[in-house]
Length: 124
Image (cartoon, rainbow, N blue to C red; front, side, top):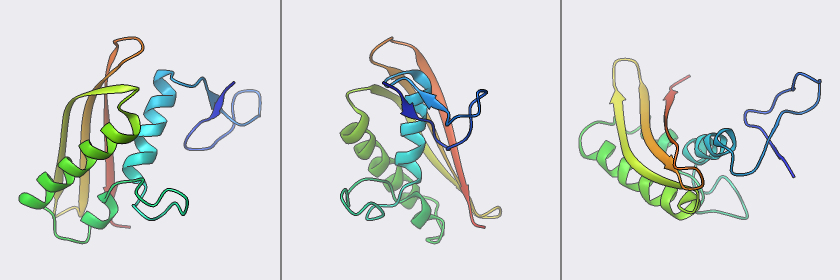
């Protein structure tokens, strides 16, 4: 069984792009979804997500970004702790560019392979 890829798009065959569950690409998609979903955005799972988008409007920096990193780590452990081991997680806010960057280094539990992911969110 396969899962739809995120962001949604066509495959080379013209069908919806998919990934095998637990594959490196599928885990990266799940990480992006968790980081970019606001808590309360999903009706049936109100605690799912992270406050990344809300942080853009808070001014960021200092203790706020440390609190965001702690909230992200807790959410990642709760939702994806069975798939990954977090090796490093940091959040940085660039006030001039109005952009928040989340840098994550993790290891897949299934294969032991290490990977990194950077998710940036800027004000439109």
